[in-house]
Structure formats: structure tokens, C-alpha cells
Amino acid sequence: MPLGHDPTEAVPSADEGGEAPCFAHLVDDDPDPGDPARIAVERVYAPPCGGAGPRILVDRLWPRGMARDRAALDEWLKDVAPSPELRRWYGHEPARFDEFARRYRAELAQPPALEAVRHLLDLARGPGITLLTATRDVERSGARVLRDHLVATLS
Image 1 (spheres, rainbow, N blue to C red):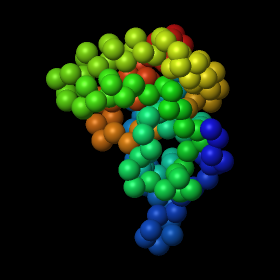
Image 2: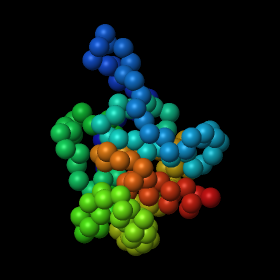
Image 3: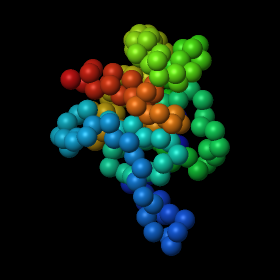
Image 4: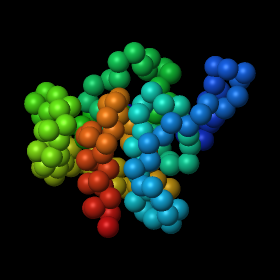
């Protein structure tokens, strides 16, 4: 569902009205501007940095404490998120991450996630996309698994 955010719009910081610092977590250390797999992963609470195309929330639940009218995102794709059962089983326990990733990749190959993955692939073939998550540990998150899945599919 498009939410009407302009991803190129700067977000002023609270101090002195300047531009907010960028806290984006770009998984690719050295993205090639011509690479169709330019996919960033960022916390939804971070101010938008622009440059990686549309900002898409990929969590099933709305981020705690985030007002919908203030969310700097373009779409919310709940269907691409891990199932509630898988999310509860994982519980962000690092020891379960590898098994979580395996199970989540299997979910991504089935409807309704499959349709959402196809949509993300279409978007990623453009200037790139930013996947947003509320998860604190971005490296061991569903968003990271999704990003890796998209990159592998585009390769």
C-alpha cells in the first residue's frame, strides 16, 4: 500500500534544523550503481537517507511507537514477512537464526509471500530498494534473509 512518502526528501534533525544523520544499514559494503541488486536494509526508525529507491516495510507487525502518518515509507508488504508461527518460534534467538533463515526461505517460495517477492524483484531491478524493519539486530533478521534471497534471485 503506497503511503506517499518522497524518498528523496531530506528529514531535518531536531538540533539546529539541519539534515538528519544517516543511520542506514546497507548490507552491501560497496554497491555498484549499475548492479540491479542494490538492496539496502535499514531500521524503520532511522531517518531516510535517500538514494536506494522506495522504502518498503517488510515486517508483519506495525513498528511499536511509530505513527503511521509520520512513517517515512512508500509501501508496507506484510505478506513477505515471516509467518507469525515462525516469528514466534525464532524469538530473535541468535542460535536459531540459521534454521529460521532456512524455514523463512521456504516460506518465500510459497503464496502469499511469493507474489510479494515478485513485486520486490520488479522494484529492485530499478534504482534499488530499501527494506525496512523494526528489528534491532538487522544482521540476524527476516529483512536480511529476504535481502539475501532477492539478491540471489536477481543474480
